[in-house]
Length: 222
Image: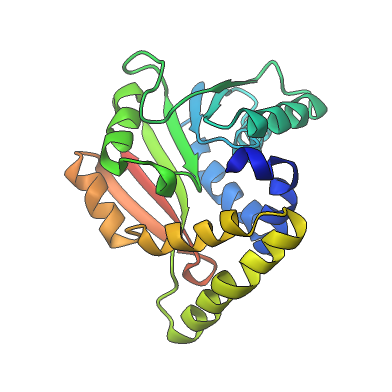
């Protein structure tokens, strides 16, 4: 599915979020920078937007980005070369639930808008924890549903009707953007997701809602 929309993914990502996604990633990067990580794993990196944001803000950091979609990685690779970050970022195909890395290998692990796509959520999170060094942060950006009734009504109408329509026009794939709404609705966001992280023995779990609750930043420490 993501291979099919890779060519228009960035445009729609920024357009459909009214470019708020830039602000959300900057928020994660500022949190990440507190830990001064030398080696970061960016899971479900897609077209490498977060990996690039990390590398540009933290020039001491090397980033490995993995994703199941080789077409998305191809788009990301072009962007990395454009920004001359190919010595700092390495992209490779990889499954979040079967990571090809050693235990305790990374100073930090990040995921932006990919956790809700894990086939087995808890298994995937445990895999991320396994490759994370003790004391290292897992930082996750993910869509959530606003609690305010007015924002929630607008949000649901936007995702149900307008997003699939625009996806069918610009990406020629209505299904992919209907899937987006379904995956967001099914994801255990907010305190429910924080409880899953605690259950998996992540420490100091915190979360912060962003932009009226349509996105949430989560943090857990191994």
